[in-house]
Image (spheres, helix red, strand yellow):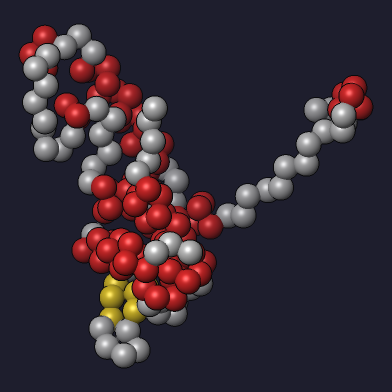
Amino acid sequence: MIRLSRLADYGVVLMTHIAVRGERLHTAHAAAMATRIPEPTVGKILKALARADLLESQRGINGGYTLARTPEDINVTEIIAAVDGPIALTDCLDAQGAVCSMETFCPTRGNWRKINDTVREALERVSLTDMMEPIPSFVPPPAGDDHRALGL
């Protein structure tokens, strides 16, 4: 199963939370309370996002975090990479260049590169602004054959 790490998921949640609330400063404590993510985890993620220049931090009693760029100029790939490192679906595609015992004769490595690039490019097309969009409510069709009358 291909799955985003919990920290990367939380990073997207936190960035979306900050983006929705505009220009004001956000403390780790307030972000943790609003998102229900444990405060130590929030602090760790906010620092990683700031190191990646996605957030700006201000120290002091009235300090906190704010977006470093507009939401439309930040994409999901950047957020994931700030928390987890570059997107790599297999170990051999990792930036660390983990060596596999089959690497020299692996018949699928080039194809995994194509798949990895496609996934990364798709995530690059999703901006923080897109993540701020509300999810439309799904109303299930009525029971029985009535759903044909609705064109569903």
